[in-house]
Amino acid sequence: MKAIKIFSVCLLIFCASLSQAQLVKPEPPVKVTFVPAQNAKAGTVIQARIDLEIQKDWHLFSEKPEVPGVTPTKIQFDDSETYTVKKITLPKPTPVYSDVFQKTVSFYEDQISIPVEIELKSGAKGDVKIKGNLHYQSCSKIVCLPPQNLSITGIQKING
Image (cartoon, rainbow, N blue to C red; front, side):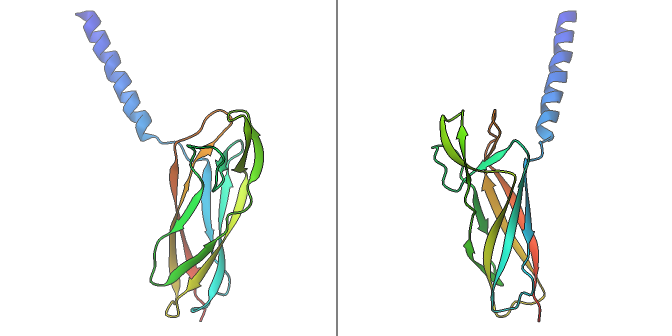
């Protein structure tokens, strides 16, 4: 009987620890920032950018990974009545030999800036909220995390 009580208490502690571990989600090794264009005017195409900061010893796969089954880096923006995203230009990734895949693959590491051409509609004024999503998979030399999404949000001020 005593063994059953001890087992029950241990099981309860294990389950509580497991549920707590699921509640505490580690911070992703990637931070995303929307950088608005300067002097934006309604009815024009502006050049904003997305800055990614990737933690040391982590990388993201390029938008066209050479390895089947890994998640490419992709940026999408929500539809809007005040703007249209015309072009997103991911920079050239860094070729790195991977011991895991036994071949050279293309990664994004450290910090990258991604130019984004945005056409502001002629009726746009004030502060325009820009919303989007970064879809990626981050890996270190020993582990790959599951694919993740990070929200991209920012304000583009319209002058005049």
